[in-house]
Image (tube, rainbow, N blue to C red; front, side, top):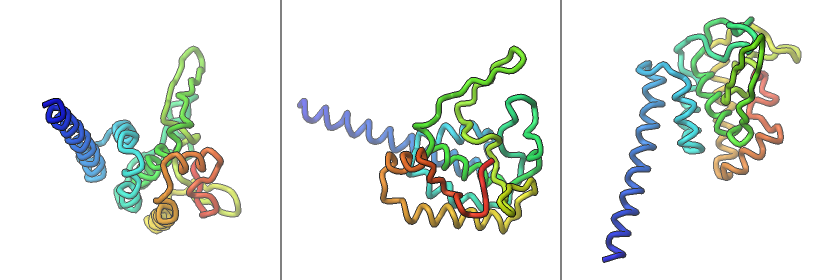
Length: 188
């Protein structure tokens, strides 16, 4: 009887974890389908899913929907020169970066004129992708062709690394082995 009850309990846990992951994956589809607009939930849900979310997120990188993406400068209310509409596929690429950076996130506090901002999801200054020309990032709007190149860069990286454990991938990220290195694009 104990083994029977234990089996039912374990099956219940397995079922709930599968339902939870399916709901998280549905949220990702809904976000890129325009049904959900809150990027914070996307970041939280991809954290929960972890490595299995990466190939799904890669597929959304070259979508043609645009919006303002990125985080504001902690010392102002804008994202400065990068305050231009950009492809929301950058959000998918950023979610991948967050999965890889998860062990490195510290929730840095930034204090300015008596206020404190905590952003545990901020791993780059503005969290947008810029094209690199002559070794310097530009402040020009990316094109859909740029997004296709970026998607291919992430897909190529994934195909080479998908058999590694998440711990190995995160360790490489910590060591500065970033996906966009030497690609003509850069996180800023």
